[in-house]
Length: 351
Image 1 (cartoon, rainbow, N blue to C red):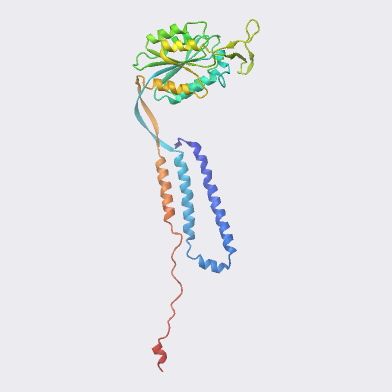
Image 2: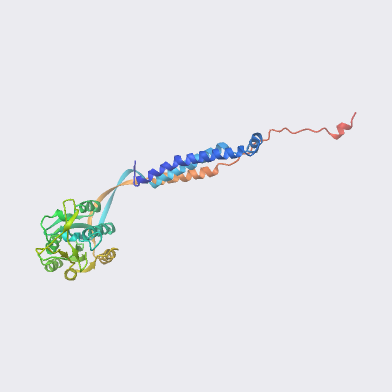
């Protein structure tokens, strides 16, 4: 047997605690009764109380509590195979992991905020395949197109500036890498989401966006940062900030979001540009845009799932509660007093 929500089983500790509380309350009640008066009189007054039935009722209440907790934990045993036809889009995310993405003009920093948005995006996709391209001074496919969101998220933990040794920001190369990662055999819409601060002095990302659009790729951009910018931090191998980058004259290097370039990329790519906000409202707007796009059958596969049996434990808990309520609180007892025969008046008059 396994459980879908095993954490709820810790609540079973409430069952013995409840039993101890009932025992303590019963002892308190007995002490209170003993202070009222004559024990013999109290015994005769409580002669009809169904003491055994009360114990059974308490036991049934505790059993019902335990069964309800097990039911909430969703016990499972056995399995069944089902044919699943999955439909959706092909969504590639190009994530900038250059050093400038560590700037903190977006909290906690640009890169951390982008990774949170990717996580939210994966949680809100419904059947769409997603892949991830990382880029800074070079680009590569970190996660190929997949519907296994948990595996994709696990790879995102390593998305840091050190994963690519070459410095810089090559948005154009990232767009071309992502375009090659799509599956041309599928009829579904290809969607590319570029998450970056937009600074690129090495490639022409607008030309790359035009090439991708010619191949049927719809491009959306999300800009992280502010137009004013902030100094670019330097970090050690553990990721701890140890200072800030400086130019040849000793002045701090300021990273500013290139909003104009990101807007142009989205325009030629047929999509929209969004500026990242603390609330993540841009992600909802993005999802609303792509929700109505053309979907296709991505794959047909056998899905094996565990069979739920919480209904059994829930039914037993309800039966225990009903049985507890059917136990009478008092029982009728036959009187042990014999009737007294009185002599007939007529008999007294004789003799």
